[in-house]
Image 1: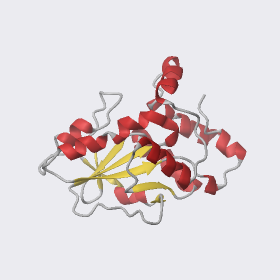
Image 2: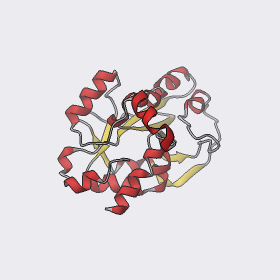
Image 3: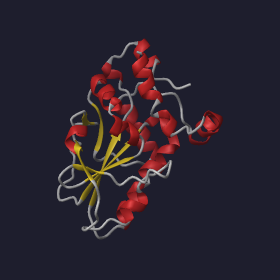
Image 4: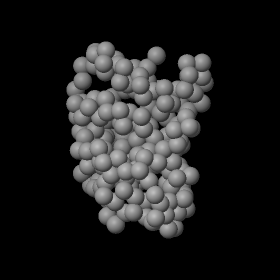
Length: 205
C-alpha cells in the first residue's frame, strides 16, 4: 500500500507544483480528490467540457494501472504528452529545462526530417498493452500518421485538462505532417472493484 501511495504522489506534484499553491490550483481549476469513475461518468465529463471522445482509452485493470504508473518513463510524462514515431518508438523531445512542457511548440515545428532521439526501450505498443478503448466503438486510429502523441489526463483535474487537450490546436496548425492524438484517461474505474483501503491511498494531501 505504501508503494502505491508513493507512486500516485509522484504524479500529483506535476500539477500541484508546491504545497503553498495547492489550494489555489485546486480552486482555480476545479481539481478534486481522485475517485473511482465509470465509462459513463467519464463520457459525461468529456461532454460537459466539450472534449473529443475519439481515440480515448483507459487502463484495463488495476494491475495495469499500477504497473504503468510505476514505470519511470510514463510517470515522468504523466498528465502530459508522449510522442512516438510511425514505428512506435518514443521520441525524446522533452525540454527538461522547463517544468511544464505540454509539447505545443514541438508539434507546431515538426517536419518530416525532424531529428530526434528515439528510445528503443519504450514503445507505443508497450504503453497501449496496458489499456482498452473507453467504449466498444473506439479504435486507435493512427493509420498513416507521421507521429503519434499520447495525451494522458484525468477527470479529477477539472479545467486543468484544457491545457492538455489544447494540444489539438497545435496539431491542426501543422500542415506539413500528420500527427494523430490518442487520449489516455488515467482515472481509476469502479469496475476494478478496488477495496476502500486501496482507493484511499490514492488520495493526495
